[in-house]
Length: 137
Length: 159
Figure 1 (cartoon, rainbow over the protein chains, first blue to last red):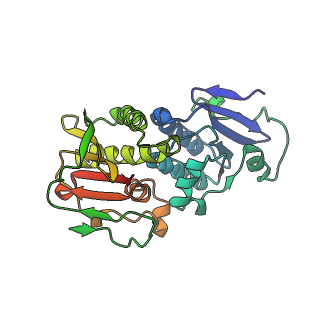
Figure 2: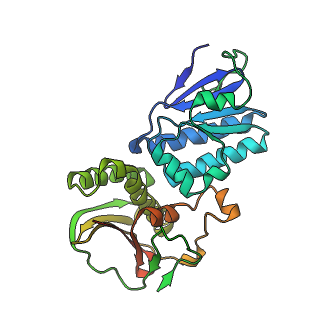
Figure 3: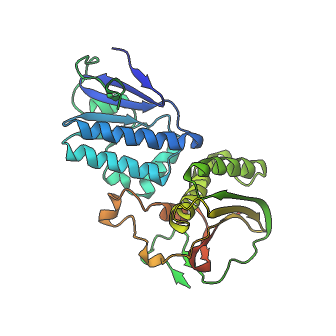
């Protein structure tokens, strides 16, 4: 199954792990990113026991609202017994996480490969577990 | 005059609240006003950053930090200062003195109590979904001062 793309969001499923990414993330994309994060919140609330990786490698700018949305996603994931991890933080974004001590609550990996591997599984795309783009959140 | 409580991080600017109006700061280089609509904030921040870059007051690597501070200040002015009332204006001015450049963000609200702003790094605060804006501003800017009991915010960076 090919990775899917829905606006700003890309999604791919690797052996049951949903890997989400952003196609772009400059300051002028900020409102769209916030809306996308809100949509992801609804997706995460709708299913239990998800394994999710959010790849922020194309995100150059994040406001405090964006940080808040990510914290909200993490809380929603935990309430549904799902696991949410982050990867690909650029220097500017990593700095925000460091300053706000969000590194204490988020598991952050260098890249999506490492993030997926951290779930202890490896393999090809799982056609029986569509990502959020296919689910049209 | 009030200062932010519990701030022991030496890398952060001390937040000060004055009851009197803000004094004139150096030369005003940029002056824009928007209605209190959050949709208008990002475009204004983008234009302000382009202006600051054109004046060589920020370098490309600083865009995210400076943009974040100006955006957070405008968001607070729109949401908390003007309570999202579209009829009320938020004003952004950029200024330059011999020693610093800065931004003045003013709203039409009645100010606020700095003591009511929670510390986002207290244990529950890390899990909060809001309340980080002012902390980030004080981390990235050299001077953070409120005037008129909080309805005018001055952020400044040393040259």
